[in-house]
Image (tube, rainbow, N blue to C red; front, side):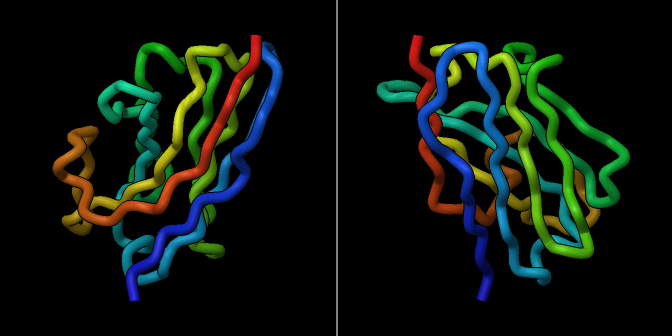
Length: 125
């Protein structure tokens, strides 16, 4: 069974930090690049960060570059997102996602075929 389960969301003040985790089924984690997306109320889901299968390549949305760090632990089948210097505009439901195709790498939402249920991040001003 393919599963992605996010955790670590919550309420934090602006300027604070929060770390998200995504526990994945090994079958979709070990050979696939992964990503974080987010969706704010009334807005489209948007790309946040991506990481290659080995972890050697990462990509970030301009809005989070320098503040967020994506990482993965292939031994634990877990994806992470460390969020620092949080802003109220970072408030959203955060989703982890796995690529449809093994060994590929992109930031295109339609290339990701497995999604978690999401975890809420709220940043107060």
